[in-house]
Image (cartoon, rainbow, N blue to C red; front, side, top):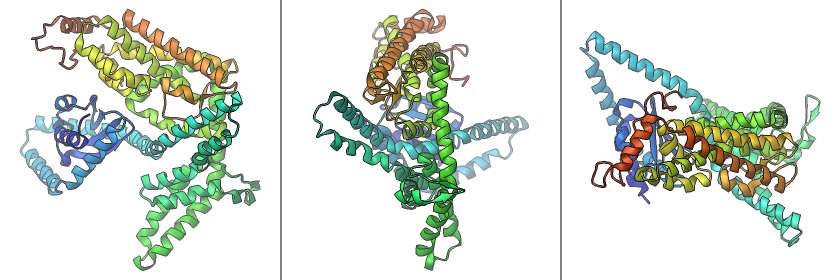
Length: 511
């Protein structure tokens, strides 16, 4: 296992140093680095760094796949290195750049202007992604607890259905429901933190939503219910609390800030949450639950086909993080999310595609080693290593993986249409790791049958589609050339995968 601090230093050197880093964020598997000057990034060196599964650049945004656990430690190490770097480095770089700009020819100025325009456009396009990442960062820290409580709830449900050890089931019920009953508090805390406020004040506002006394409050002729608005209400309330707190800190004298700022924050944000946000968020939450259920109950196989086929591109761009609040809302509303099992088929299609590549080019040691290393994570629901290490670089296999996911999603959608909804009682898991977290309108058995059938179909279709037409002639020639290279050749078994993909083959450039 690579040393996190050493890896952070290597990444820092490859991206052009602290002065070139504008922002650093991470999800469960990827490190996202926003750079000031994309030209200063040594992408080949970054991709060759031990511990980096894959690295791709999209304008000023770098996505570095490190895997779960390691990415958190590297992100912390990178932030520490940035904090320790002298602030003068950024100023020096700026002065040097400005000096270099003087005396440029018209052609050079035009080229630089075009580059600045392209970078500005990339930054503009990235605003939506940054907003999605900011919202997802509120929920990502909650995922381990959601998985743990979901697994305990699943075990408890199985024991209850079997009638075994009845004295244990109430005990497990408390363990599984305690966190979920206070989910609004944790969402409010994280929301306030992400938007520059004090977490505990956001939690105080989020706690209003689940307070029992809410049942005694009437707003616009409607009596509120504890939990109304759920995580969406807590999300909005926590964000509002952060903005109120930041405003109050600017206008409040320091001598009374300790008393005035938190009091006004909870009073104002809490009143708006109680008087407006709970009702509005309640309507939105119910609408999300109704729409998702209706979509799969009526759209069935077709809706599942579309959703399953589109999920890998969402993962590739990071936009799948924007679905976390929707999944959480569905779980809060109905007890499970019907979207996650359908979307999980995208990863299953990719597994089938990668196994087909392994079979077809089994003499290519580099490709086989990459697939063999990434498949275990794929079976556990972490698809980024396979996306960035295998299917996306090769081009067509990414598309055939999506086809496999589409057919698998169609099968799961068909079960929903037949009245046997397939849902997941927690988020954060996928593929085989999602099996213990299944539930639905007809119970665990039907949910398992629907999900298992979808997995098998996605594996098979992804495998067959890739085997038949998943590799273009040029990519096939490159892979076979690497396979036939002698061990002393530059393309040795320990060499990284190196395939020339033409623009027509590549789907990454088009997205």
